[in-house]
Length: 381
Image (cartoon, rainbow, N blue to C red; front, side):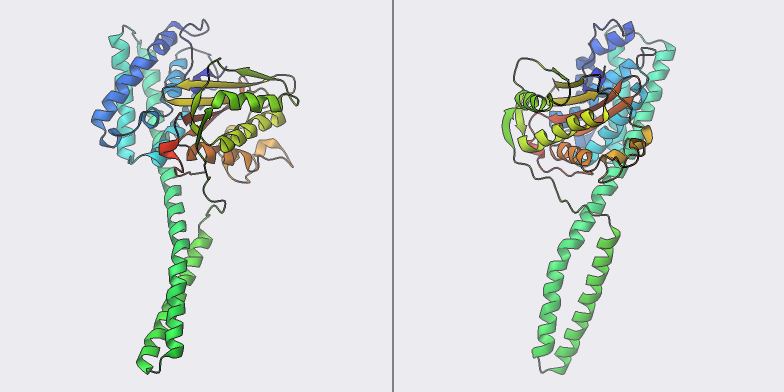
């Protein structure tokens, strides 16, 4: 279905070509070799925690491998683009990377991939090598573009926040100058006080104009209250509450999946995804909710069949109050999906979306297992 979006393609899947199965079987070795080399070659990566360094790479690796199975899915190329964008966005929000470091680590991934496959006896023919290289090159472009866009959004938020905060001391200075002007009998002092008042009024006007020009999110940061709990229990609870309204298949293991997150925010985010799946998905096909883990990260995927989300709407659905054009008159995604993205990003994670006629629609919340080091991370949503 959408196992590639969480980095859980199976090397035993008979529908995959042998080359894809061979690649998937080496996922752990390739990614570990990549992380080791990135830490030594990219200074900004040296001290990154494992879940941040790993990022969306398991899902990206599986999706890249799936390309080598012809007709595996019409959506995998789109999935690669989404994963590349999330990778670039996370690097902008959670690291000290610049664009050069981002490009360098992805070039290292390409080189390590070919080297490790060869070292383990997996041979790529000319066409397969060309396919992988072309898509890694596309990933570099899309990740760099997302990195630039998110950095610009964060700079805009910073400027808006600074401009807003400056108004308080500015008002204090203006009030003090006005008091000096009214109480002093010295003509020179009063003249200088008038100049201070005029200047502070001008700066205040410029600040207000700047704030008017910047689309500053009035909702403020997502406030997280982190606690240790079992994500599996929370997911079960959300599913049980929604089952009276739609058939839901739950895919998770018997063991608890414990970590540090904000239970209230995560619950609301998953409920939003499930409610959207009920609202926009096919009534005849059950929704699937899957909980999975990779190295120090946890993924919650909500999947439904039904009309796909148009590619041109893949970003607008995450924008506050923006209505996706394909949803028809009188319908829209409202604040739900922007909230889901803000919650994921505030935990140091991401949201990945994939949608096609063939495979339906899947949203994946991908989080560090321990969000405490990243609580309150900047969000571009």
